[in-house]
Length: 249
Image 1 (cartoon, rainbow, N blue to C red):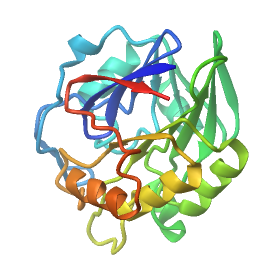
Image 2 (tube, rainbow, N blue to C red; image 1 turned 90 degrees about the vertical axis):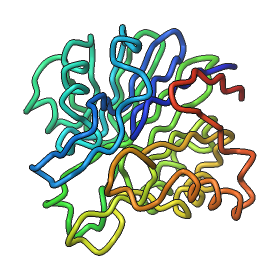
Image 3 (tube, rainbow, N blue to C red; image 1 turned 180 degrees about the horizontal axis):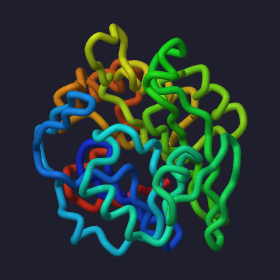
């Protein structure tokens, strides 16, 4: 079974799965400053939006932060046929966004997308940071695909794994995102990403959300080192920027 993944940059990747072109957390802006949350984008996309379209489905972990949904990414998403995200995103953005509650399923042909509960940073800051969702994508005869979104809670990963593990392919959002004055990481650290991969029993892992933004405190090299230290280096897939990579499971 082959799934193709094209890493675009930041949290963004195109997944070719069961005949669908699925785009994760679209970000296509060139570098600039986003004053609303004081975020700085440091690099543009590995491929322009024009090279990605058409897409059949956008999986949007959350809509309130530019590092997961920038201006150009929003434009692409809103002209796509379907965006699956949080109920809050659907209420604010309107069609074609469909909001899913935790554990709710949405079918698109033979493909089933299940929304999974997430938490973006510590529980005490949930109301300030806002909600986030993870996803599981399945189809008959295809590998199971797990997308962490910006979930940083290993306790929730354990819940996901208990229901759906082991998974074939996990796309993990790492980078240990940090913003002042919050003293803790708001996304998975590299070590926690390796722990999540082991928890999920993932056969292959794609790491995203590790570069292109100034507030990502851990790099792709940090992620690779953490997986090597955990004895999982052969699980982590090399996904060069802008390259279409075949993942066999």
